[in-house]
Image 1 (tube, one colour):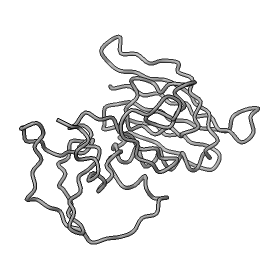
Image 2 (cartoon, helix red, strand yellow):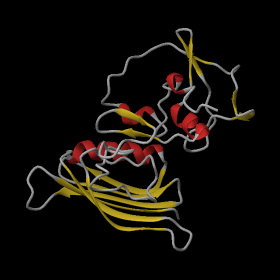
Image 3 (cartoon, helix red, strand yellow):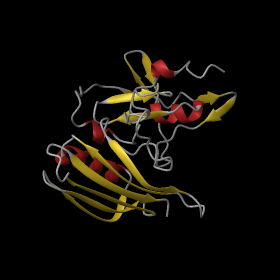
Length: 216
């Protein structure tokens, strides 16, 4: 099957991270559309249920004579990598060429995104990454890394606040200001995460984020 046959129609919902919350800074225009419960999806002859990242059932949307499908769910069905570049407001479909930023805009020619990090975890496009842990030796995926960026603390703080809200942060605490970012808790009630950000010492205009995450 040609896996790109449906890509042109998969924009409604933009469920790259599961919610429109991360798009607060984008140019949004309100429209009137319809949830189309009459349409079913079949992949290689097998019925396929559209779901978001939390397993919630999704419904195709009809607008202006066209039907739109959630891009994250369709990418999973067709086995095509996809991610959302929160810094540049771009949905990235397929494998990115060397040096163009990979799935998150990180320059893959110099720094690589942690393998075990969830694919929808936001990292700014200019990030320089230093990985300190990235393993699943015990059957549990674990990641620890730091990155520096010129993105401001309040912008990245907003992005991460939306991300953990979408992922249902439990037992969590959050401090997001123009000077500091501190977020911790359990994503989905099971996965420990810690996100801290502060100005980079000795490098004016840059900020450093430290991330730890594990499956359970």
